[in-house]
Image (tube, helix red, strand yellow):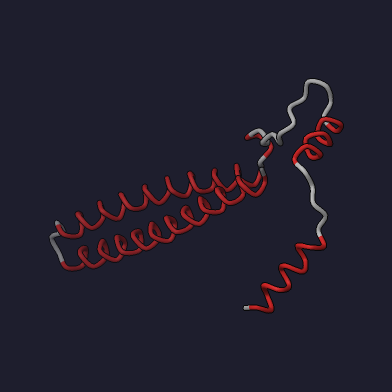
Length: 123
């Protein structure tokens, strides 16, 4: 711990001190007349990765919702089936649709997380 602290202190002494006035003065020299000195964020249209991932998240979320409703409907039909044959077929279809819905919800969540990260990284 003391080695790290001594390295940090040694490096801090190597960095020249900079006053706030010199930073403001250098920004005034670099900024054109009438321009804002702060950094401006990019417009939404200039974040293609974030937009693409957001669109993937929305589309796959909608698909997952549809697959989930389909799985629920198939399960209801399976429970109301007159024969064991239809019960097994509809049950298997409902299970497959539910699995696809779960996978698609996972894809939507991953794309949404990626979109949020890309939004801040691209900015």
